[in-house]
Image (cartoon, rainbow, N blue to C red; front, side, top):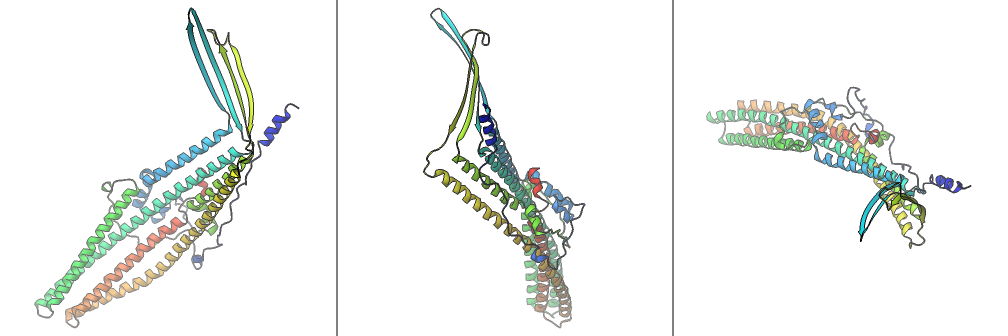
Length: 458
């Protein structure tokens, strides 16, 4: 019968107060609205799901993206925060076990002709019994917090990766625009030569030459501006990979002429593929566990302690010593706190409800991001097709009006108008391609890149 109290304690140790975590339902559609009439692509088996940028088949982009994990300082800061969260979990788990300490002392004292020596060595242990699951709930909360930190780290990494890809395509757009403007400058230079020849023969007015010169110089100015923006995007990429702008030079390249298909899975999988959703979900679990931590305050705290040691007044500690030991159990219970514990529990529940609302809003925003990306790619593809026809018509109009001007059947204003229209349409077509690429990157990011919740416990 003497073991009954101890057996009861161990049975009580399995009690955990507070609600067990169950992920709340989130508003998730069965299919994406924009997938109607859209054939989802299947991801290629030879593409690493983590290296999502590989779908662009650009070796330089791949090289730059891989440097983010090495040099990006924001990523390093969040990685340090994640390591801190892991240490917090380890610290909380330490409360499962007793705390053991040791101490020793020695004293030698002389009084008149007497010399006395005293030696003491002692070990002590204390253990707060987790009868109501307070420690277990705290560990659960800290573990969820660490996983939320891991998801936040993944979200920051994905944001940096997508920002680099967007900056890279913006840089390529500026290069392509510069080439277009350079070709246009050459064409305008030829037009200026024609206008001067026409003026020299008395066929054209001096105003035609001035108009041609103005058009040429303004286009040269636009060409210079494209170079400025190109340099700024290169500098932004350098910062993303953790390098001073002076240490990075990106070789010239071209904007892609085609847009890759995007592998789009069912909406339900988005909950496992978006790190920001995973972070919000783990925050809910963290706050749910803290309700149990606060609820445990209603129950008494019970702790055990023990001391054992030797004390000697002689030279030999263990031969002439006497044993010192003690065992103790204590318990404390708050009798009256004017509702403080109840208020703490209600505050924890309110914080949990706030986390639930934040989670559901994050899910809704994620679906909006995907729908925006899908609709953007669909609409931009239609726009690109129509714009290509406009470019062809504008080029033909420029060719015809320039020939008519040479023949003296039209004025130079008509030529300038046709050339300006052609350049505008060329720029618009190039801008549409740039928008398609950046929208494509945004859609891949909205779909979670190559990340899944399986990586939270890697």
